[in-house]
Length: 595
Image (cartoon, rainbow, N blue to C red):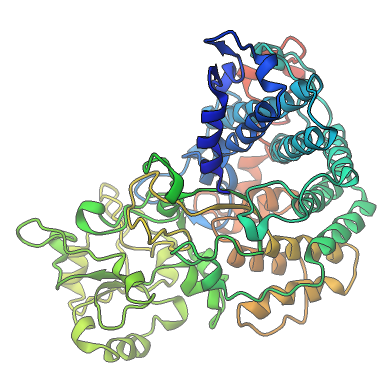
């Protein structure tokens, strides 16, 4: 059952008890004689609390800042028309007053409180022990996911383990050490496994329900992070063991393109271990989907032009594209290399004709079987290995009538510096064949135009075919099976175990690549950048492995050669100043280094 279908059902069950969000979450608004204890201690009431705990996850994973949360300050992304947060991507004026960090921190604790509510009301419930414990353990898993995100971004944080009926009480907790937070997560997840009340796996049934498989996957991720942060080598052994339990001898057998199919057909694949789920068919508000299909893409025109309306930031950086090797099947499944049009287009008018009518035809790519053959191509983005003149000419020759006037933008080294750049009208005057051979960086007042880098198509929803925010109903994949191969590879590498290379090469085999003969952290991070482009946790990966400064120094265009001095001790995010001010048990001494 899809998440939003569950929530609609929950609202019907809840009746006269209103659940409200943020700081007032689960403060009962009693509009009848039924009070909160009477309702939430019933089987239906406990289920309503559990469904609401799942729903809180969208505040993180469907936030407009989710790309910033997990990918800012890394090596894979660059600014588009909209700049990435200067504080989180460049460490410019990064202070404890930062609003983005505050929202992340607050939403995690609001989510934790919703999970603890299940335990609070279950203790007073008369439902069967099995039903009670299953609901509690689902909430405990989600709570541990929040603490995993917190400890990986802030280090030690206040460890809230009891539900407070008054929201303000949640703030009155001392800061726990990172070790205490990791220990709490490990203890909770281990107890859930021992209880054995959750389903074995929910992956092929949507993935939106906590399962023993998901618990083991989160436990593997937690042991891996804790091994690095706490310098506990035995935790690498446990991380590898739990990752292997999830892998369970499996290979990656589904073609990458089918796994991430825009028609949603891959969303319930067994590789997607835990999801935030969406269900367009049963969702009453068709505007209440997620915004992911606009991410990792610039602005190419809006829906009024028949084009992809990207969020215009976190554009793939040349370093990200270079991670993909020639022949990597994941490249064409991750990026849209052709922008289709209904008729020949004039770049002066954008994707509209002389009368202002739209000629963009972005989604016809999917209606045409996921290819451009037989369709007029407005823009073509050849990969760096096919950007030479001979390869471009060969591409045109395959469908000359529809490609003779195509505007060619090679995804080569010139994409590394896309701002500011000349207008395309000037470029066309200099390069009448439509092939841009250079960019002009001299005019600082020039607008950062949109078409220089290809869109990411990995998260497209071809069923809605609408790029306005909230119109995608693809599931959001929070924990995946390929990620477990990377966890195992990293842990085994730290243990000097040859199984590290075996786990890594399973991922490469599915991508159509030859096996690696050597392995190190850079090779693992390179491979995960390709497999998990967009849906990975790049900043957390780089911080955990000690690569954050190095990769920013080498690849972040704002920090090349200066990252060490700029980042300094600020490897973790600051504890929000508002959280310190509101918590009598926190002081400035609890702040992270560098702030």
